[in-house]
Length: 333
Image 1 (tube, helix red, strand yellow):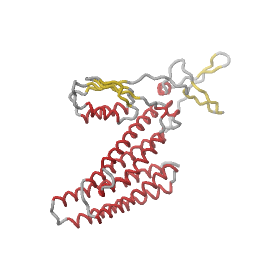
Image 2: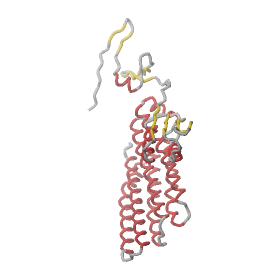
Image 3: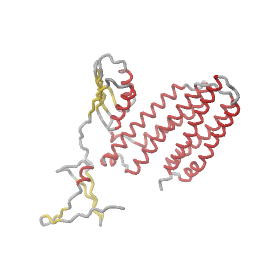
C-alpha cells in the first residue's frame, strides 16, 4: 500500500506559500539549509528535485590492522572497505611482514585503487576514479566479452590449446569489474544525485546488480571447468561429448545476452524453457561416464571420475545462471 504524505499549505507574505519538506527526503539527498532545490511545474503536479550542482564530499578513510590476521581475512576487510566506498585505505602491519606483496596484489585488483605510499609498516591506497564517470552498461559489456571468451577457451585446456593461468587471469579481470560495478550501484542506490548523474533509477540498478552477479558467477565456473580439464587426461570420446554439451550452453549464453541487450522477451522465454534439456544432458552424460568406468579401480580412473563430476557440476550451474539471466530479462516490459 502506497503511503501518501499530506502537508498543509501555509501562506507566506503577499505572494508566496510554504510547504514543509519531509526530513527523510532532505537527509537522503544530503541537503542542508541554504541548498537549492529545483521546482518543475507539471500542471497539477509540482516536482521537487535536489539541485544537480555537484557537491564536494569528504573522502572516506579507513585503517586496517594486519597483525594477527590471515591473508584471507585481510582480503575480506580490504574488499569490504572498497565496496563500502572508502576512498583511502590504510593497511597497518609489522615491519618485514612477508604478506605485503599479497596485500599489494589485493589492492591492485580493485579498480581505481592506487598505492600512493608504502613504508616498512604501512600501505596507503587511494581511489582515483569518480563514481559519476562510470557507465554500468559498459562494465556489463566488458564482463560479457571476457566471460564469453572464457567459455570458448575453457574446453581447450584439456587439449593444451589454452592455459589455465590465462583463464584464471581473465576471471580476476571479471572480479575487478564486478567489484567496481557493485561499488557504483551501491553509491547510486544510496545517493539519488549519483543515480541522476548516471541517468538510471532504482529498478534498473537492482537489475544491473543481478546481471553483474550472474556474469561473475558464470566466469568463476569457467575457471573451475578449465582447472579440472587441465588437471586430468580424458579420452577423445569423452572430450567430444563434453564439447557438444558446452557448445549448447555457450549458444544459450549468447542468446540470453542478446535478449538482455535488446530486451527480446521471446528469446528469453526460449532460453528459460530449454534449460531443463541442458541440465538433463549433463546428468545423462555423467551417469553414462560413471557406468562405463565403474569397474576400473586405478588411481587415475578415480581422479578422472572426480574431475568429470566437477566439470559437469559447473556446466549445470552455468546453465542455471543463464536461465536466471533470462528470467531477469522477462521482468522488463
